Image (cartoon, rainbow over all chains, first blue to last red; front, side):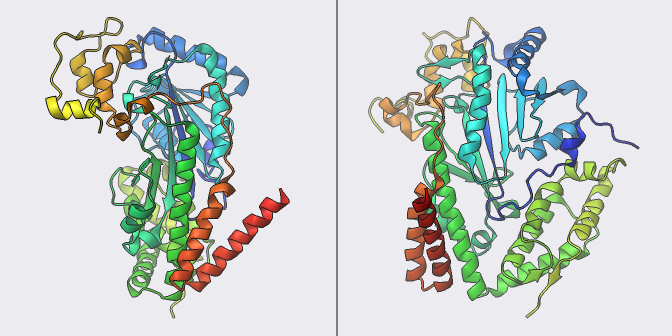
Length: 348
Length: 125
């Protein structure tokens, strides 16, 4: 069975993250919510009103040549691919339209929870510069007028996002801190009260040793202070992770070494691999490469696989054939074996 | 927590419904009950009508300093790009001191090099 998709080939063939990502800080996302000054927010609009709003926004962004993807033309797998690609972890109401920038770095959801939700994916360290990009685009739409109050700032359908409407998420890969059990102590010491941390699934289990660091507030703080506080906390956590990795290189921990070699064994010899398990194993492989216990692939290769081994990416990677759900974990194992075929363990 | 803080008031009095307030929005028909259940707001007017509930929902420590609880964005201002070096340098120096204290000399050497690199870059600018 062939898969039909409305997504552009440029997007399907593109890795979510650019090559050569930082293995400790692979990605960040910037999300900005806005409502237009029209009387009603999306949940209360009629279909005709929603259509008009979408047209107005498209007109305002005409020069930017965004690709318009109406929601009803996308399959659930297409949508899942978009959310995976843009590292979208929040719950989202089905929007009426997706706008995609030509480089596939920016996704704009039209008429989801709010009239507009900008979502920018960034795999460089310069979040501050990327924020300026999103502010430029926002300015183009600002000609339509935003729902705004001097007291609450930008008005969103969920009050917790009102104010700046800005959420910045830093993806931090911290296997040394998490696996040695030092993460809580480091967070107690380094984490600012203005930030919050969670795993990709919203809890504190840190699947794949990935920690999501984001701003807690959007009220009473400026965009600049959000950026500054996050940058400072991120830098501190990165330095702590680097220090712990150096410590593990000098004084190896038998438990960590065992976990790395076990991860290697399972990952390279499994017949089936589920996503959560794969993320955790890949993380240990990355740490093994860093500590010199494994060799043969670039140090950031396991991090790239983090983002390509998930369901929708894997399915489209295996195009044009449709992969039934029950075969997917087997195909994932095959994919990982192939991508890491040069990986070797160095036993001392 | 200050005496005027809505959180304080909520702790004292609970979140009892104030009967005198309007129970639904004339613009979008969103009800007070729906807002208190955490359902999305339907329009800008809801922010005026249900301001008391919204204050309660935004359980921020900043609420306790009422004068701070105002929108502080720089609307229509260009976002200033922050020089990452400004905050990285003190952090690196701090980490260097920690590494020396812990006799982690390999890490200390790497940190020293990073500090030197930043200082050189700054001088070049």
